[in-house]
Length: 488
Image (cartoon, rainbow, N blue to C red):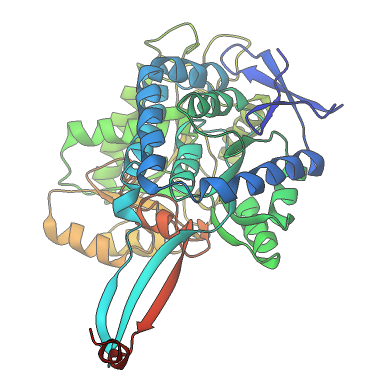
Protein backbone atom coordinates (compact mmCIF):
# COMPACT_ATOMS: atom_id res chain seq x y z
CA UNK A 1 0.00 0.00 0.00
CA UNK A 2 1.45 3.33 -1.12
CA UNK A 3 0.46 6.32 1.01
CA UNK A 4 0.07 9.95 -0.05
CA UNK A 5 0.53 13.36 1.45
CA UNK A 6 -2.71 15.13 2.44
CA UNK A 7 -2.77 18.71 1.18
CA UNK A 8 -5.75 21.04 0.72
CA UNK A 9 -8.14 18.30 1.81
CA UNK A 10 -7.05 15.71 -0.77
CA UNK A 11 -4.34 13.19 -1.53
CA UNK A 12 -1.31 14.91 -3.00
CA UNK A 13 1.14 13.08 -5.25
CA UNK A 14 4.20 15.09 -6.23
CA UNK A 15 5.72 12.18 -8.12
CA UNK A 16 8.26 11.46 -5.40
CA UNK A 17 10.86 8.87 -6.35
CA UNK A 18 11.92 8.27 -2.73
CA UNK A 19 9.88 6.00 -0.50
CA UNK A 20 10.20 4.71 3.05
CA UNK A 21 9.03 1.37 4.40
CA UNK A 22 6.45 1.22 7.20
CA UNK A 23 6.80 -1.95 9.28
CA UNK A 24 4.65 -3.99 11.59
CA UNK A 25 7.29 -4.18 14.35
CA UNK A 26 5.80 -7.34 15.83
CA UNK A 27 6.40 -9.28 12.63
CA UNK A 28 9.14 -7.32 10.86
CA UNK A 29 7.19 -7.14 7.59
CA UNK A 30 6.45 -4.08 5.45
CA UNK A 31 2.80 -2.98 5.63
CA UNK A 32 2.97 0.27 3.65
CA UNK A 33 5.25 2.62 1.75
CA UNK A 34 5.39 6.31 2.57
CA UNK A 35 6.52 9.05 0.14
CA UNK A 36 9.55 10.98 1.34
CA UNK A 37 8.69 14.56 0.61
CA UNK A 38 10.78 17.70 0.59
CA UNK A 39 10.60 21.43 0.00
CA UNK A 40 8.10 21.07 -2.88
CA UNK A 41 5.52 19.27 -0.76
CA UNK A 42 6.09 21.60 2.20
CA UNK A 43 5.55 24.65 0.02
CA UNK A 44 2.33 23.21 -1.38
CA UNK A 45 1.04 22.47 2.13
CA UNK A 46 2.03 25.85 3.55
CA UNK A 47 0.52 27.66 0.56
CA UNK A 48 -2.76 25.85 1.10
CA UNK A 49 -2.69 26.50 4.83
CA UNK A 50 -1.84 30.20 4.37
CA UNK A 51 -4.67 30.66 1.89
CA UNK A 52 -7.16 28.96 4.20
CA UNK A 53 -5.95 30.86 7.27
CA UNK A 54 -7.67 34.04 6.09
CA UNK A 55 -11.11 32.41 6.18
CA UNK A 56 -10.61 29.96 9.07
CA UNK A 57 -9.28 32.61 11.47
CA UNK A 58 -12.41 34.67 10.77
CA UNK A 59 -14.77 31.81 11.68
CA UNK A 60 -16.55 32.69 14.96
CA UNK A 61 -15.10 30.85 17.93
CA UNK A 62 -18.33 28.93 18.74
CA UNK A 63 -18.40 27.54 15.19
CA UNK A 64 -14.76 26.46 15.44
CA UNK A 65 -15.59 24.77 18.75
CA UNK A 66 -18.54 23.00 17.10
CA UNK A 67 -16.17 21.37 14.60
CA UNK A 68 -13.96 20.26 17.50
CA UNK A 69 -16.95 18.78 19.31
CA UNK A 70 -17.90 16.79 16.22
CA UNK A 71 -14.28 15.70 15.81
CA UNK A 72 -14.23 14.41 19.37
CA UNK A 73 -17.43 12.48 18.69
CA UNK A 74 -15.84 10.80 15.68
CA UNK A 75 -12.63 10.06 17.57
CA UNK A 76 -14.63 8.38 20.33
CA UNK A 77 -16.54 6.39 17.71
CA UNK A 78 -13.34 5.26 15.97
CA UNK A 79 -11.15 4.94 19.07
CA UNK A 80 -10.69 1.19 18.80
CA UNK A 81 -9.91 1.41 15.10
CA UNK A 82 -7.27 4.04 15.83
CA UNK A 83 -5.81 1.98 18.66
CA UNK A 84 -5.40 -1.02 16.38
CA UNK A 85 -3.68 1.18 13.81
CA UNK A 86 -1.26 2.32 16.53
CA UNK A 87 -0.58 -1.29 17.53
CA UNK A 88 -0.06 -2.32 13.92
CA UNK A 89 2.51 0.33 12.99
CA UNK A 90 4.09 1.01 16.40
CA UNK A 91 3.93 -2.32 18.25
CA UNK A 92 2.30 -1.15 21.47
CA UNK A 93 0.04 -3.55 23.28
CA UNK A 94 -3.64 -2.91 22.59
CA UNK A 95 -4.18 -1.46 26.07
CA UNK A 96 -1.22 0.89 25.60
CA UNK A 97 -2.51 1.92 22.17
CA UNK A 98 -5.94 2.64 23.62
CA UNK A 99 -4.26 4.85 26.22
CA UNK A 100 -2.33 6.64 23.46
CA UNK A 101 -5.57 7.44 21.64
CA UNK A 102 -7.49 8.33 24.80
CA UNK A 103 -4.89 10.84 26.01
CA UNK A 104 -4.99 12.50 22.60
CA UNK A 105 -8.78 12.73 22.68
CA UNK A 106 -8.50 14.43 26.08
CA UNK A 107 -6.61 17.27 24.40
CA UNK A 108 -9.37 17.60 21.80
CA UNK A 109 -11.86 17.73 24.66
CA UNK A 110 -9.79 20.51 26.26
CA UNK A 111 -9.65 22.38 22.94
CA UNK A 112 -13.45 22.31 22.73
CA UNK A 113 -13.41 24.95 25.48
CA UNK A 114 -11.50 27.36 23.25
CA UNK A 115 -14.03 30.17 23.76
CA UNK A 116 -13.18 30.24 27.44
CA UNK A 117 -9.46 29.61 26.89
CA UNK A 118 -8.91 32.55 24.53
CA UNK A 119 -10.98 35.20 26.28
CA UNK A 120 -9.12 38.43 26.79
CA UNK A 121 -9.02 40.76 29.80
CA UNK A 122 -10.27 44.28 30.39
CA UNK A 123 -9.57 47.05 32.86
CA UNK A 124 -11.79 50.14 32.63
CA UNK A 125 -10.27 53.43 33.72
CA UNK A 126 -6.69 52.11 33.64
CA UNK A 127 -5.80 55.81 33.40
CA UNK A 128 -7.89 58.99 33.27
CA UNK A 129 -10.68 58.35 30.72
CA UNK A 130 -8.74 55.37 29.26
CA UNK A 131 -9.94 51.77 29.12
CA UNK A 132 -7.71 48.75 28.36
CA UNK A 133 -8.74 45.54 26.62
CA UNK A 134 -6.62 42.54 25.57
CA UNK A 135 -7.40 40.00 22.85
CA UNK A 136 -5.77 36.69 21.94
CA UNK A 137 -5.55 36.10 18.21
CA UNK A 138 -4.23 33.28 15.98
CA UNK A 139 -0.73 33.59 14.57
CA UNK A 140 -0.96 31.90 11.16
CA UNK A 141 0.36 28.64 9.74
CA UNK A 142 1.71 26.33 12.44
CA UNK A 143 3.78 23.19 11.92
CA UNK A 144 4.13 20.04 14.01
CA UNK A 145 6.96 17.50 13.83
CA UNK A 146 6.17 14.36 15.82
CA UNK A 147 7.93 11.11 16.81
CA UNK A 148 7.09 7.45 16.32
CA UNK A 149 6.43 6.50 19.93
CA UNK A 150 2.94 8.02 20.33
CA UNK A 151 1.35 8.11 16.86
CA UNK A 152 -1.97 9.51 18.14
CA UNK A 153 -1.31 11.39 21.38
CA UNK A 154 1.66 13.56 20.45
CA UNK A 155 0.19 14.96 17.21
CA UNK A 156 -2.99 15.69 19.16
CA UNK A 157 -0.93 17.60 21.71
CA UNK A 158 -0.50 20.12 18.91
CA UNK A 159 -2.96 20.43 16.04
CA UNK A 160 -6.33 20.46 17.91
CA UNK A 161 -5.31 23.46 20.04
CA UNK A 162 -3.62 25.27 17.16
CA UNK A 163 -6.65 24.83 14.90
CA UNK A 164 -9.15 25.67 17.65
CA UNK A 165 -7.27 28.94 18.18
CA UNK A 166 -7.92 29.84 14.52
CA UNK A 167 -4.61 28.77 12.99
CA UNK A 168 -4.01 26.35 10.14
CA UNK A 169 -1.61 23.42 10.48
CA UNK A 170 0.95 21.29 8.66
CA UNK A 171 1.84 18.01 10.37
CA UNK A 172 4.95 15.98 9.63
CA UNK A 173 4.45 12.70 11.46
CA UNK A 174 7.28 10.24 11.89
CA UNK A 175 7.76 8.39 8.62
CA UNK A 176 7.75 5.20 10.73
CA UNK A 177 4.11 5.65 11.83
CA UNK A 178 2.19 7.60 9.16
CA UNK A 179 -1.02 5.55 9.14
CA UNK A 180 -2.50 6.90 12.37
CA UNK A 181 -1.74 10.51 11.45
CA UNK A 182 -3.52 10.21 8.11
CA UNK A 183 -6.56 8.66 9.75
CA UNK A 184 -6.68 11.46 12.34
CA UNK A 185 -6.66 14.00 9.51
CA UNK A 186 -9.38 12.16 7.56
CA UNK A 187 -11.67 12.13 10.59
CA UNK A 188 -11.12 15.86 11.13
CA UNK A 189 -12.20 16.54 7.54
CA UNK A 190 -15.22 14.31 8.09
CA UNK A 191 -16.10 16.45 11.13
CA UNK A 192 -16.46 19.48 8.85
CA UNK A 193 -12.99 21.01 8.98
CA UNK A 194 -12.46 23.03 5.79
CA UNK A 195 -9.90 21.75 3.30
CA UNK A 196 -6.48 23.29 3.81
CA UNK A 197 -6.82 23.87 7.55
CA UNK A 198 -5.01 20.61 8.36
CA UNK A 199 -2.37 19.16 6.05
CA UNK A 200 -0.03 16.16 6.37
CA UNK A 201 3.40 15.98 4.70
CA UNK A 202 5.55 12.86 5.02
CA UNK A 203 9.32 12.72 5.01
CA UNK A 204 12.52 13.01 6.98
CA UNK A 205 15.05 15.75 7.69
CA UNK A 206 14.44 17.51 4.39
CA UNK A 207 10.82 18.14 5.38
CA UNK A 208 11.84 19.15 8.92
CA UNK A 209 14.30 21.74 7.66
CA UNK A 210 11.87 23.03 5.05
CA UNK A 211 9.20 23.62 7.72
CA UNK A 212 11.71 25.36 9.99
CA UNK A 213 12.83 27.73 7.23
CA UNK A 214 9.68 28.33 5.18
CA UNK A 215 8.72 32.02 5.37
CA UNK A 216 5.03 31.13 5.54
CA UNK A 217 5.31 29.14 8.78
CA UNK A 218 4.76 31.16 11.97
CA UNK A 219 5.42 28.51 14.64
CA UNK A 220 6.98 25.06 14.94
CA UNK A 221 6.18 22.42 17.56
CA UNK A 222 8.50 19.43 17.93
CA UNK A 223 8.79 16.28 20.05
CA UNK A 224 11.72 13.89 19.68
CA UNK A 225 15.32 13.39 20.76
CA UNK A 226 17.26 16.19 22.44
CA UNK A 227 19.76 16.47 19.59
CA UNK A 228 17.07 17.01 17.00
CA UNK A 229 15.08 19.25 19.37
CA UNK A 230 18.08 21.56 19.67
CA UNK A 231 18.51 21.57 15.88
CA UNK A 232 14.84 22.37 15.26
CA UNK A 233 14.77 25.11 17.90
CA UNK A 234 17.98 26.72 16.60
CA UNK A 235 16.94 26.61 12.95
CA UNK A 236 13.33 27.72 13.45
CA UNK A 237 14.32 30.54 15.81
CA UNK A 238 16.97 31.76 13.38
CA UNK A 239 14.21 32.10 10.80
CA UNK A 240 11.99 34.17 13.08
CA UNK A 241 9.55 31.50 14.20
CA UNK A 242 8.11 30.61 17.55
CA UNK A 243 9.37 27.20 18.56
CA UNK A 244 8.63 24.68 21.30
CA UNK A 245 10.93 21.66 21.06
CA UNK A 246 10.58 18.81 23.56
CA UNK A 247 13.62 16.52 23.71
CA UNK A 248 14.77 13.33 25.40
CA UNK A 249 14.87 12.26 29.01
CA UNK A 250 16.45 10.11 31.67
CA UNK A 251 13.70 9.64 34.21
CA UNK A 252 14.40 8.29 37.68
CA UNK A 253 12.23 6.15 39.95
CA UNK A 254 13.41 6.65 43.53
CA UNK A 255 12.28 4.07 46.09
CA UNK A 256 12.62 4.70 49.82
CA UNK A 257 12.46 1.86 52.39
CA UNK A 258 8.93 2.85 53.46
CA UNK A 259 7.39 2.58 49.96
CA UNK A 260 4.21 0.50 49.66
CA UNK A 261 5.50 -2.63 47.86
CA UNK A 262 2.65 -3.81 45.64
CA UNK A 263 1.57 -0.50 44.12
CA UNK A 264 5.22 0.55 43.75
CA UNK A 265 6.06 -2.62 41.82
CA UNK A 266 3.12 -2.10 39.46
CA UNK A 267 4.23 1.49 38.89
CA UNK A 268 7.86 0.52 38.20
CA UNK A 269 6.89 -2.17 35.70
CA UNK A 270 4.43 0.07 33.88
CA UNK A 271 6.83 2.99 33.78
CA UNK A 272 9.95 1.10 32.71
CA UNK A 273 8.59 -1.61 30.43
CA UNK A 274 5.29 -0.16 29.26
CA UNK A 275 5.41 0.76 25.56
CA UNK A 276 8.65 -1.29 25.51
CA UNK A 277 10.33 1.63 27.28
CA UNK A 278 9.87 3.86 24.23
CA UNK A 279 8.47 7.01 25.77
CA UNK A 280 10.01 10.19 27.04
CA UNK A 281 8.37 9.65 30.45
CA UNK A 282 9.62 6.07 30.84
CA UNK A 283 11.39 5.24 34.08
CA UNK A 284 14.86 4.23 32.94
CA UNK A 285 16.72 4.48 36.27
CA UNK A 286 15.65 2.78 39.49
CA UNK A 287 17.23 4.01 42.72
CA UNK A 288 16.87 1.99 45.89
CA UNK A 289 18.03 3.99 48.90
CA UNK A 290 20.20 1.75 51.06
CA UNK A 291 21.59 -1.71 50.34
CA UNK A 292 18.60 -3.64 51.70
CA UNK A 293 16.13 -1.59 49.66
CA UNK A 294 18.16 -2.00 46.48
CA UNK A 295 18.55 -5.75 46.97
CA UNK A 296 14.86 -6.12 47.69
CA UNK A 297 13.80 -4.26 44.54
CA UNK A 298 16.29 -6.12 42.38
CA UNK A 299 14.57 -9.34 43.46
CA UNK A 300 11.04 -7.96 43.09
CA UNK A 301 11.57 -6.56 39.60
CA UNK A 302 13.42 -9.68 38.42
CA UNK A 303 10.61 -11.95 39.64
CA UNK A 304 8.01 -9.83 37.88
CA UNK A 305 9.96 -9.79 34.61
CA UNK A 306 10.13 -13.57 34.65
CA UNK A 307 6.37 -13.68 34.09
CA UNK A 308 6.08 -10.74 31.67
CA UNK A 309 4.75 -12.08 28.35
CA UNK A 310 6.49 -10.49 25.36
CA UNK A 311 4.53 -11.23 22.20
CA UNK A 312 3.18 -10.15 18.82
CA UNK A 313 0.80 -7.36 19.81
CA UNK A 314 -0.93 -7.34 16.43
CA UNK A 315 -2.13 -10.91 17.06
CA UNK A 316 -2.28 -11.20 20.85
CA UNK A 317 -4.43 -8.57 22.57
CA UNK A 318 -3.26 -9.89 25.95
CA UNK A 319 0.47 -9.41 25.31
CA UNK A 320 2.28 -7.84 28.26
CA UNK A 321 4.96 -6.08 26.18
CA UNK A 322 5.54 -5.57 22.48
CA UNK A 323 8.53 -4.92 20.22
CA UNK A 324 10.66 -1.84 19.73
CA UNK A 325 10.05 0.22 16.61
CA UNK A 326 12.55 -1.22 14.12
CA UNK A 327 15.63 -3.36 13.54
CA UNK A 328 17.99 -0.42 14.15
CA UNK A 329 16.53 0.21 17.61
CA UNK A 330 16.66 -3.50 18.36
CA UNK A 331 20.33 -3.75 17.38
CA UNK A 332 21.28 -0.60 19.31
CA UNK A 333 19.66 -1.83 22.53
CA UNK A 334 21.12 -5.32 22.22
CA UNK A 335 24.57 -3.77 21.83
CA UNK A 336 24.16 -1.58 24.92
CA UNK A 337 23.06 -4.55 27.05
CA UNK A 338 25.87 -6.77 25.73
CA UNK A 339 28.45 -4.09 26.50
CA UNK A 340 27.13 -3.40 30.03
CA UNK A 341 29.35 -5.94 31.90
CA UNK A 342 32.51 -4.47 30.34
CA UNK A 343 31.59 -1.09 31.87
CA UNK A 344 31.19 -2.62 35.34
CA UNK A 345 27.41 -3.10 35.32
CA UNK A 346 25.78 -6.45 35.96
CA UNK A 347 22.95 -8.00 33.97
CA UNK A 348 20.68 -8.83 36.90
CA UNK A 349 17.89 -10.26 34.76
CA UNK A 350 16.86 -10.68 31.12
CA UNK A 351 13.31 -11.74 30.41
CA UNK A 352 12.07 -13.73 27.46
CA UNK A 353 12.11 -12.29 23.97
CA UNK A 354 9.22 -12.34 21.54
CA UNK A 355 8.52 -14.36 18.40
CA UNK A 356 11.15 -14.64 15.70
CA UNK A 357 11.00 -12.04 12.96
CA UNK A 358 9.78 -9.15 15.10
CA UNK A 359 11.87 -6.34 16.56
CA UNK A 360 11.79 -7.65 20.12
CA UNK A 361 14.17 -6.79 22.96
CA UNK A 362 13.94 -8.85 26.15
CA UNK A 363 12.98 -6.76 29.21
CA UNK A 364 16.22 -6.23 31.11
CA UNK A 365 17.37 -5.12 34.56
CA UNK A 366 20.97 -3.90 34.93
CA UNK A 367 22.48 -3.64 38.45
CA UNK A 368 25.59 -1.95 39.84
CA UNK A 369 25.19 1.01 37.51
CA UNK A 370 26.96 4.15 38.76
CA UNK A 371 26.56 7.81 37.72
CA UNK A 372 29.84 7.81 35.76
CA UNK A 373 28.55 5.21 33.28
CA UNK A 374 26.98 6.13 29.96
CA UNK A 375 24.23 3.66 30.88
CA UNK A 376 23.14 6.21 33.48
CA UNK A 377 23.77 9.33 31.41
CA UNK A 378 22.32 8.33 28.02
CA UNK A 379 18.70 7.93 27.01
CA UNK A 380 18.46 4.26 25.98
CA UNK A 381 14.79 4.40 24.88
CA UNK A 382 13.94 0.75 25.35
CA UNK A 383 12.95 -1.89 27.94
CA UNK A 384 16.22 -1.61 29.86
CA UNK A 385 16.14 -0.46 33.51
CA UNK A 386 19.32 0.50 35.39
CA UNK A 387 19.53 0.03 39.18
CA UNK A 388 21.58 2.50 41.27
CA UNK A 389 22.25 2.23 44.99
CA UNK A 390 22.44 5.64 46.72
CA UNK A 391 22.94 5.58 50.49
CA UNK A 392 20.61 8.49 51.28
CA UNK A 393 17.88 10.70 49.89
CA UNK A 394 20.33 13.60 49.66
CA UNK A 395 22.75 11.51 47.60
CA UNK A 396 19.95 10.35 45.33
CA UNK A 397 18.75 13.91 44.68
CA UNK A 398 22.28 15.13 43.96
CA UNK A 399 22.83 12.25 41.54
CA UNK A 400 19.58 12.93 39.72
CA UNK A 401 20.31 16.65 39.46
CA UNK A 402 23.64 15.89 37.75
CA UNK A 403 21.79 14.55 34.71
CA UNK A 404 21.59 16.88 31.71
CA UNK A 405 17.91 16.08 31.20
CA UNK A 406 15.00 17.45 33.22
CA UNK A 407 11.85 15.68 32.15
CA UNK A 408 10.41 13.48 34.91
CA UNK A 409 11.19 11.88 38.26
CA UNK A 410 9.16 9.98 40.84
CA UNK A 411 9.57 9.16 44.51
CA UNK A 412 7.89 6.19 46.20
CA UNK A 413 7.49 6.78 49.91
CA UNK A 414 5.04 7.04 52.79
CA UNK A 415 6.88 10.08 54.18
CA UNK A 416 5.43 13.50 53.51
CA UNK A 417 8.70 15.13 54.59
CA UNK A 418 10.71 13.09 52.09
CA UNK A 419 8.22 13.81 49.33
CA UNK A 420 8.35 17.54 50.08
CA UNK A 421 12.14 17.63 49.99
CA UNK A 422 12.10 15.70 46.72
CA UNK A 423 9.59 18.00 45.00
CA UNK A 424 11.42 21.14 46.11
CA UNK A 425 14.97 20.06 45.25
CA UNK A 426 14.73 17.94 42.07
CA UNK A 427 15.65 19.91 38.95
CA UNK A 428 13.09 18.69 36.45
CA UNK A 429 9.67 19.75 35.28
CA UNK A 430 7.35 16.81 35.96
CA UNK A 431 7.41 15.02 39.29
CA UNK A 432 5.48 12.10 40.69
CA UNK A 433 4.76 11.01 44.25
CA UNK A 434 3.91 7.30 44.18
CA UNK A 435 3.09 7.63 40.45
CA UNK A 436 5.22 5.81 37.89
CA UNK A 437 4.52 8.07 34.90
CA UNK A 438 3.90 11.67 36.04
CA UNK A 439 2.75 12.88 32.63
CA UNK A 440 0.35 15.84 32.99
CA UNK A 441 -3.25 15.59 31.84
CA UNK A 442 -4.53 17.78 29.00
CA UNK A 443 -5.25 20.99 31.01
CA UNK A 444 -1.62 21.13 32.17
CA UNK A 445 1.56 21.74 30.18
CA UNK A 446 4.05 18.96 29.45
CA UNK A 447 6.82 20.75 31.30
CA UNK A 448 10.29 19.43 30.49
CA UNK A 449 13.34 21.36 31.68
CA UNK A 450 17.04 21.59 30.80
CA UNK A 451 18.08 19.44 27.80
CA UNK A 452 14.58 17.96 27.73
CA UNK A 453 13.09 21.16 26.32
CA UNK A 454 14.11 24.08 24.12
CA UNK A 455 11.82 27.08 24.08
CA UNK A 456 9.55 28.92 26.47
CA UNK A 457 5.91 27.83 26.23
CA UNK A 458 5.32 24.06 26.44
CA UNK A 459 2.81 21.84 24.62
CA UNK A 460 -0.65 21.20 26.09
CA UNK A 461 -2.69 23.21 28.56
CA UNK A 462 -2.91 26.97 28.76
CA UNK A 463 0.75 27.28 27.73
CA UNK A 464 -0.21 25.61 24.46
CA UNK A 465 -3.01 28.14 23.95
CA UNK A 466 -0.58 30.99 24.57
CA UNK A 467 1.95 29.49 22.15
CA UNK A 468 -0.60 29.33 19.33
CA UNK A 469 -1.95 32.85 19.89
CA UNK A 470 -0.60 36.36 20.25
CA UNK A 471 -1.95 39.17 22.37
CA UNK A 472 -3.30 42.46 21.15
CA UNK A 473 -3.75 45.30 23.68
CA UNK A 474 -6.24 48.08 22.90
CA UNK A 475 -6.27 51.37 24.84
CA UNK A 476 -9.24 53.64 24.13
CA UNK A 477 -10.25 57.12 25.21
CA UNK A 478 -13.45 58.91 24.25
CA UNK A 479 -13.71 62.63 25.00
CA UNK A 480 -16.74 63.38 27.15
CA UNK A 481 -16.73 66.91 25.70
CA UNK A 482 -17.98 65.42 22.41
CA UNK A 483 -21.05 64.03 24.17
CA UNK A 484 -21.80 67.40 25.75
CA UNK A 485 -21.33 69.18 22.43
CA UNK A 486 -23.93 66.95 20.83
CA UNK A 487 -26.36 67.75 23.61
CA UNK A 488 -26.55 64.12 24.73
